[in-house]
Image (cartoon, rainbow, N blue to C red; front, side, top):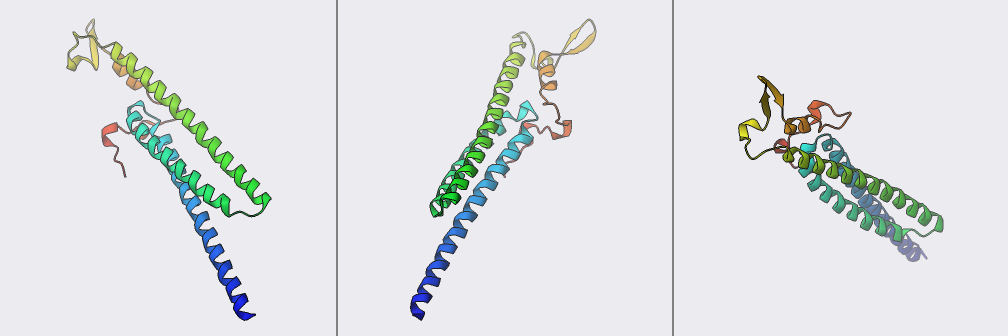
Length: 172
């Protein structure tokens, strides 16, 4: 009898270890998604960061794929219908937040593209590189369309110090 009970405890310990491992993996995957979302959100304060946003968005997509796999592994360990329903609800909530955020990123990228096109449309072939930042009219310096677009590129709520020029952003 004792060896039977010992085998049951050993089996239970293995199941528990597997469950904790799966749960931990899902937690790490969720944290990676959150970290990428936070990083992208901070970069979306400035149009100049669009290329970095695109790069991190790829990392976000990969992190979300990892979350799907980790959640699927977790879900397969559940034995009660109630736990499975909660699991489905949990993933549905995470996917909705992810898709809502992806829509925000898509709108940001579209806005950047429109601003970029309008800025470059105003540059004439006769303009020298030194004149693109400003044009002189009637003895006064007026900002060019390019400067105006960059000036308006900030999203409301973002401070000047939160704008990170593309060449200064270092990837970890």
